[in-house]
Image (cartoon, rainbow, N blue to C red; front, side, top):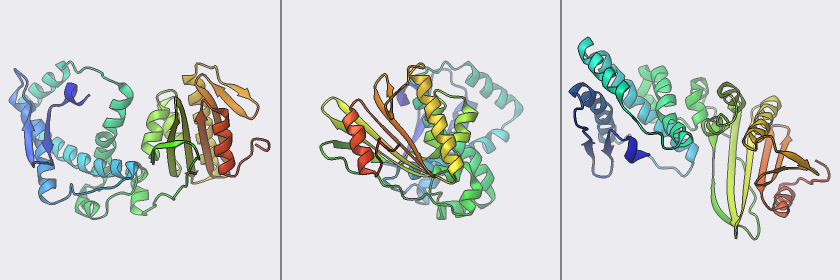
Length: 292
């Protein structure tokens, strides 16, 4: 996706701006792109790019600030161009034939730009302080009032599952949840269902050819949790092409078994081709299929 769509980029490794120039590319477009990448160079000079975290959602929030700031000043540069330059630029951009590699991955990639631009625009009068206290989550980026109030995510635990190899464990976050839900349900419904996110942790395990996905989410209110649970159910109905069916206390999907449980403000999702694995996880988390 990067190689098919990259225009130019700033490399933090060697602190160099690389310009990728297509034949016939107008100067106005090159300047427009350079305004974005040179802002990254300025961020780098002030050590604003020196940020590391193992939390995927926190890192997305950081990228939203970095890319949102670059876009904010990129458009500020655009507005200072002459009408003739803007006309040339827009005609060139509208005529570009950009290949679609994977819509879902592209939507994830664009979060840092789309959400970031809106967030930085809201914070533009105080952007230096944003770098001093970066948003803790994509939720804070999507809802600047929660950034102002410093509403931080709650810690959510995932059990270790004996006999299964842990491949990855991390945090989805509100922005990711919204993005994957809208692959199969209406975008506004997905956004509403993801709002009210309080925290989550997911873990992906493997054993032989089998997989096991465990997602533990926390929501601000019980109604928020119920709204997400319904959205995830509808999401599953859609991708399974309405083949979801009840098997005892579980749902059976084309790929295996699904447990979808709400406990007050908590929603738990467990998916695997192995019914035994789902039962084991629920038991480890204090749930019994006999009482669900």
